[in-house]
Amino acid sequence: KTEMLKGLIGKKIGMTQIFDENGSAHAVTIIEAGPCYVTQVRQPERDGYSAVQLGFSEVNPKRLTGGELGHLKTSELPPLRFLREFRTKTPEVNVGDTVKVDVFAAGEHVDVIGTSKGKGFAGAVKRYHFKGGQATHGQSDRQRAPGSHGAGTTPGRVYKGSRGPGHMGNDRVTAQNLKVILVDAERNLIAVNGAVPGPKGGLVMIKEARKQ
Picture 1 (cartoon, rainbow, N blue to C red):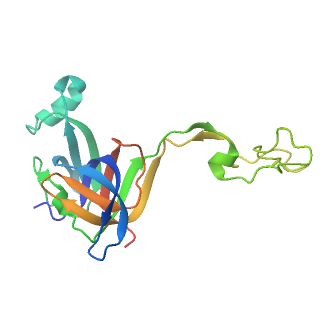
Picture 2 (picture 1 turned 180 degrees about the horizontal axis):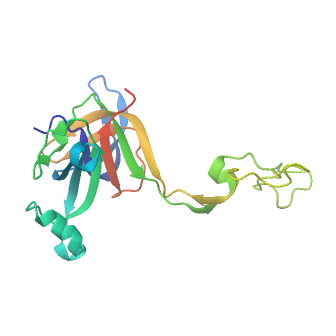
Picture 3 (picture 1 turned 90 degrees about the vertical axis):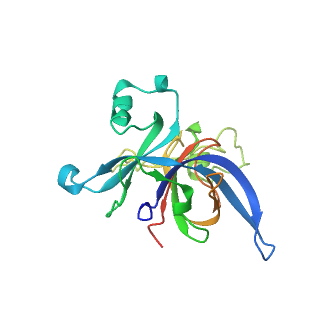
């Protein structure tokens, strides 16, 4: 009974293009999603909310801590590297069940959550698309500078949270409302229209789209 749980953990394989029956090309991201194991079911009476915890990617038991192994061993599950929770009002699944890519079908819309590529310390032009200074009239080192953005007498400082240079990327990012183009149940592959956050091989979570 895995129909009610519209969620999977997967690994980004990369991008390609797929042609539909009209001959139109679609840029798609291929994700190896599942099989995922139900490792825990959260109940409102016990935990205060409803959710399903899924596990993905079997690994050598030496890669996990004792607590992680014990958590999985109580349900006789294999050692799983990644555990993630999916909120659901009616978790009609049991611990030990397997959730596969066929919970989604071509034509549906999904949200894909990943960790964006880290860019390190970036300037305001790269990070926030600032215009920069003029390229001539005595410009020597101001072309990619953010410019002055503190007020004069009041408040006499730069407001907290102002856009400027700083750490860019390596954030949790959600790509919303991506259309499912292809589902390959035999090879546990799902193809979604457009790009998803993160590098090749990066961990992603696939959920039913919230803003349909």
